[in-house]
Image 1 (cartoon, rainbow, N blue to C red):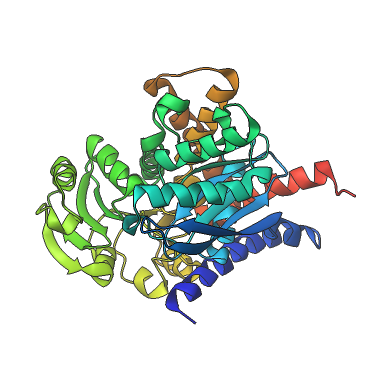
Image 2 (cartoon, rainbow, N blue to C red; image 1 turned 90 degrees about the horizontal axis):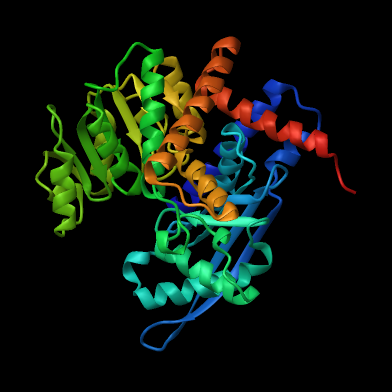
Length: 426
């Protein structure tokens, strides 16, 4: 069995463990925990397509509706070589918890194709996307399932999905996807929303432990959409970004990395943060990127992929606070280690919920034919993040639970209550 496949199985094991742990804490009746764990439907679709050279090729894609008790399924579509069925199910479970914790009238979903978009032409990506969506059309729609961007996808991919779906029903349906271009009904603020939510979560958690975001030393693993925006926004609020890592490796600068310089170098063609000259090289490649977890800092933000931190790496972390920008970056064993070391973890199902929150606001604008300015959107995202944190922190304090378990319990309770009120049919 490949290492990638093992990692994705671990992701699903972790997601199911956290739901089960929360259900047992709540004392849920027999069968209800299993109902909440089990996905509503798992679609595996065949994706034949033509390469630019005329050769026929074939891929497999997935779309998982985990829970739709509280509203339409909501979740991103991921294009990454490591995508598997189990990973998509695990991510969909996380989305169900996330929408419940944020009190959004949505369920949880996720989709993905095991491809590397960096080695495909724009034409190949479009053909793959349209064929994938054509297989999903009966299950998509503003009142059924609303995809969004994720790792390896962007607003252009969402535009293709919008067009493919709209062509099938005979009229444009802006609300079928979120994270789409502004010109097609997308929302201002969506690009930065997940990173903005991570920084707001960090700031709120800092206040509770007597630490200030301004002046804090932050290490960020992952410099993609989430990590880069988290770095920019934390830097703008006075934090020092002392270390950055991506697939190319990691860099460190004790008095703070110049984030504007990093962004400029990447726009000019640098393929990795290690090519920007913005800090001291501390490791090359994926193995070197993990060196960032040993950096002396006040706060660590894992913003790359899942299962990046196991119990061994957790023993090396020197931060006081870990804020999860990625989905599932810490394993349950890593959680145990960090808790035993009194390191506070702000979990992904809350910390990176700024993205789905902004997606929800995009849906609201689409349904009501409104267009809010960027400040209005950002203020709403921050307000909803603050409200959710207050609920999370109060519940955590009252019940003497770590944020991870408190978040899982709040999410599972919301879903369980909805199941009880709706009942079973037939």
